[in-house]
Image 1 (cartoon, rainbow, N blue to C red):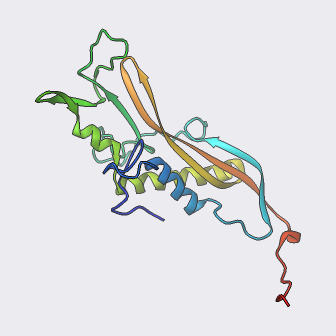
Image 2: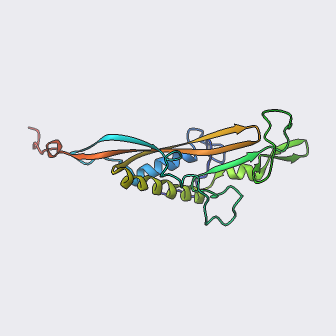
Image 3: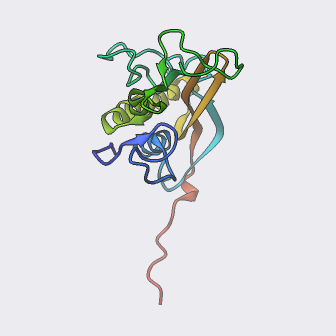
Length: 202
């Protein structure tokens, strides 16, 4: 499964056209990664035990999760800048004497610009928060690679992925990012669990 022209999703919740508030870009990417490389249907006679959950953004071997994308043609526009989505934001219109202020210090994406009647949403910020379908496929491929990378590390089979939106608000910086975790298990097989043909009912 891959994403097409109708799959433009927000980084936090809903579609870019403000429809479908029940899902998001990270939700969809995790669902597709699970479908493409995870355990969607158990084979007859199989089950999984010794279950282990890996938090990709925290695991030492998952250094790629927020790594910079060396093939990004426009680094600093916050579109496929990283292996998985991350955005460093600021607000140049806040009061620097206010503890909750996030003044721009350079390199971040300003969330507001000056409009006729005061600050308005920066179109570049809105665009960065909208993950269009080519971006969706880029992050999907990376999610699948991350899921499969841990199979030999753990000596287990990838079963399921979850991803979500999170943020950290600091006095001088806002960080928006996706978290991710995968479920892995040891595949077991038992011939006695196979279904048998009992013949037609009489």
